[in-house]
Amino acid sequence: FRNVRVTWLVEAREEVRTPAGRFQAFRLRGRNPFSATEIWYAPELALVVKEVQERFVGHSLGPGRVTTELLRYAPPGGERWFGFSLEAVNAAVQRGQGREALAFHEREAADLERRGLPFEASQAHVAAMWAARPLGLFQRSLKAGARAIELLRAERRNDDVLARLANAYFTMGNVYRMAGDRAAARRFQEEGAALTAAFEQSRSRLFWSAVFARGLAQVALAEADYPTAIRQ
Image (tube, rainbow, N blue to C red; front, side):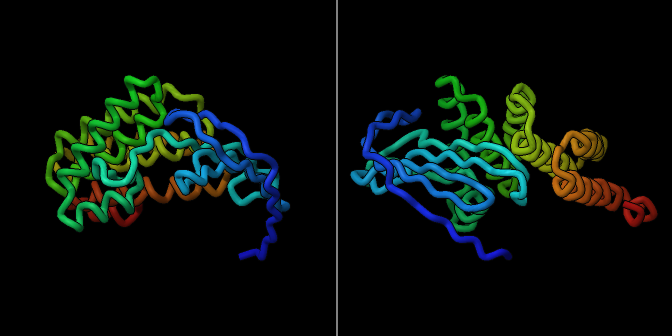
């Protein structure tokens, strides 16, 4: 890994607006040769409530811009909150909180859609898909995944959206395979594989091509089609 030095400057204390509300925050700007980042830190909450990263040419992920904002804030002692990442979902399942996490993600997905935040809602649907899968609740997993794909297909395409869409297709294929519907499993893996050509970054194309080759090999293995599984 490269050693990268980042210089940070506190530029202002100001009000910042996010989907979770308005907050008084310090605006900090950081810069290195590959990216520039602005963050808004709200000291009363002890949280970063907004972040904007601008990637330059030469960044490992390629040029681009990512904005991250606080969607909801609940003070300590309120409803239990579950993260949307795969790691957070798996941790909840391992703690025996899988059903609680699933219900939370389903509620959050519906609420985010009502609030007019379809991209964010798609991530909650994906989290619900992940939570339902190890519980054996395949129909709920597939319903959540199908809705995530529907929402993501309506978004403006870039490599980040494509990666999330590819992830949803791959997981849907896996869930169908686990449920015993190998034809549907193959269809989702093939449709996902077709998306890989749209990635701008060659690294992403190679990565997701390998992911879907693995998915198709798993389907072939489930069908005892060993020559196809080996070729994949």
